[in-house]
Length: 115
Image 1 (cartoon, rainbow, N blue to C red):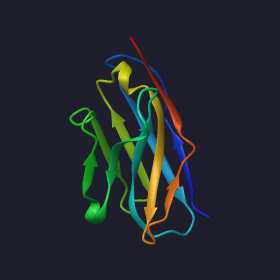
Image 2: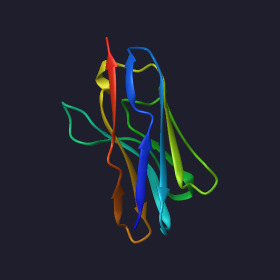
Image 3: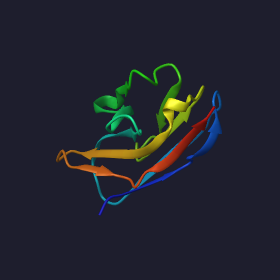
Image 4: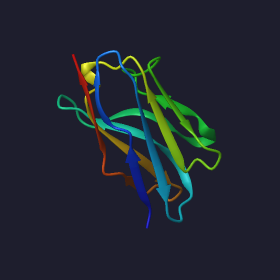
């Protein structure tokens, strides 16, 4: 059973920073791992992910502000979020896809950016 545990969400003022963490557990061969978010205005959207060969993919709205990183085993991912904006407010979900293409999701962590 794969589990993803997120931490690090919270309330921050516009322009501030937060760092999210996600640790995976259980036997799984990780093909991709990263973050998506659900905002009030949009469907779940890509934030940042590591894919094949540790290639990084960022959502257009977070490029140059957010940085994803991982450990050597790529079973923990971090998301450093800088220059946060109110439109970044939402629930951030950790995501993992294994080599059978099965997708796993964390429960989500709330990020709220105030004016």
